[in-house]
Image 1 (cartoon, rainbow, N blue to C red):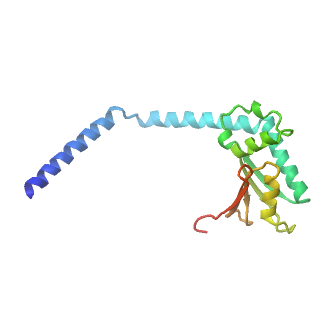
Image 2: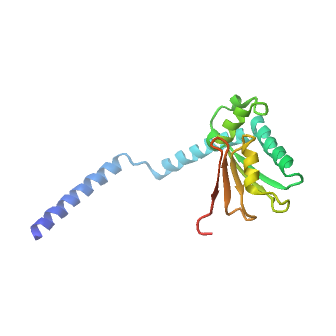
Image 3: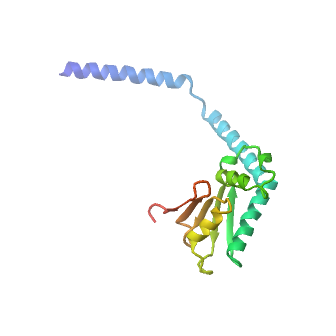
Length: 169
């Protein structure tokens, strides 16, 4: 029994040495890894800033805001619109955003939209509001409560609304 244990231990030791030597051959220095991460983040931030300063972003933001004011007159709303999967995409394809319903559908399925509306003050049913937003080709998330812990996720492509509860809350 001791002999088998010794053989197994020796094999495991050899395997760990081979693995260790294989890992150290291609290992990058800590500084190289940090430089790669910094470069990746810099490029991602440049693309995000390009999105946030684009005409399409401004049109989309105004479209959502105008839609909310139309559906819930006098409401106060906070809107966050981020590029989502549109990061790095050529935004020139969305040039006729305000006139083209299909283009809005594609845009909002890629962008990341978060809305916080004080619909309690105006007695608006949030599920009905989600349906109305989807009928205008808008997809995203909307705060369920005043603390934004739970959200309704609504997808204009599938026409589905789901409740996402923050785990542990």
